[in-house]
Image 1 (cartoon, one colour):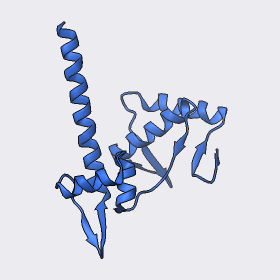
Image 2 (cartoon, helix red, strand yellow):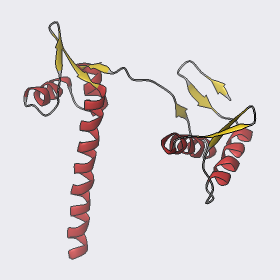
Image 3 (spheres, one colour):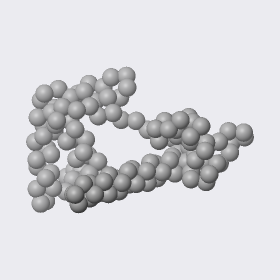
Image 4 (tube, one colour):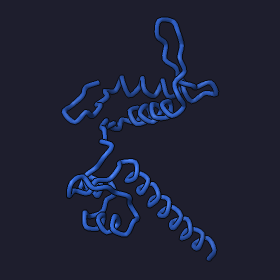
Length: 140
């Protein structure tokens, strides 16, 4: 496995095969993840296990996994990029009270958790609208 300058994990064929094997072993009824250190076994939290299973699935299928970090506080430009909207649209959302923000001097800043919550809420609305369309289609 080789890391490039963007922290992308580039798995070779053998590593893809190994990822698939580990994923198969984890998909059984007792597929809980654990860490063994000095003969002591410590189970991993379920959330961490799901994350690792997702990574293994992507690697097994030959996909690319990008590892990055997001600061707790975002600029308006960065927040707009995460939401897939323009900065003026983001500022309207802030002004309308749709998205909490705070000022650092004269600059508007947003908590990453608030931005992700807004993104999740928008995706939920989109899924609900799509389901409504599908229900209408099924009714014809």
